Image (cartoon, rainbow, N blue to C red; front, side, top):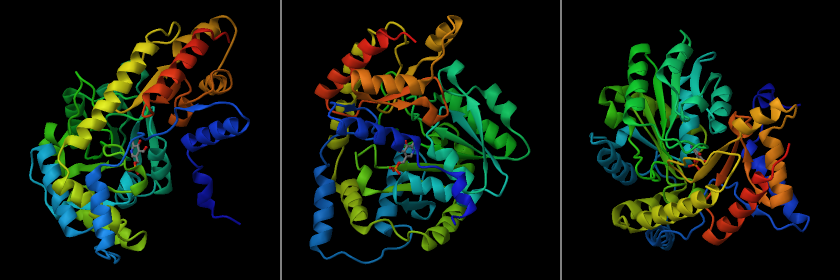
Length: 397
Ligand code: PLP
């Protein structure tokens, strides 16, 4: 009854983890949820004011498919400042979150059978969208290189069918940040082999010192005409529910995206557009600084608790707001004693024994990792990580 393409995708593994956590909670257990890809906080006042003012002005009509021109100009100014290069409004498409920007990108650059390199662990939506668009994801392991792919591994994976490479920095789920050298290597490879770079910097606002986030086009300006920048305000302004993001890239790509988006969603929500425009024009840096401080405090608290882990290395958590635990050593050790366990088993145990919901690395193409979000309030985070650490330190598989 359903179309054949429905076998190409499932709902995301992260959503499944949240469902399992909810089910455990309905059985009367206190569950602390570390699965969410979002930050618990209040709205920026300028976002709220921009939205309310738009509603009070009776704003209600379609906008241009790619977003209001004033908003695209404001975004162009922002991207110009971030990349130290001039950008214009016709190089920007405003989208319903970064998800739509990524989907648009896949749909307008991929032909059936085109291969796309994806460093693993990866955010699950990358391969799902590439498959839906007819492409083939090719995964590159990164565990041995601190979750950033080596140039050697990337070069080895390129074939005559390779069309693009996904760079997600800071990375979901690992928190890894690509340094300038890694970015320059990717850019050079893309230029040498005529590849697109899909550059997802949704977590770029959260780089933890001494690490810094670099837009790839600021490191390698010559790669700009083959780079598609994907970003949104879901993480940087804690606006997950407002569904507002953008794709920035060559005019020809943005033109094709306009045609595609005109047949799918049309413009992103008009009130969210006005709210964002007001933030960009009047918001100032205070809200984002406060959010960055909140995330940095949570990270510091979390790392100090996780430093008591005895069987799992402390995560580095260079960027974003996730701790990514590496169980591979523990798994190897168990195997030498004739026992086997997966990250899914550990996630189940953490849910049942510690009352802490986490996401198994299998959702990110990695059977040896566990992702913990630290975007929740400090008191709950403290409680969750103490319980989680105690359970992990007693693990006997
Ligand atoms: N890119 C990455 C790496 C993400 O982790 C997410 C959301 O979790 C997105 C894109 C999607 O963001 P949005 O909510 O803006 O669609």
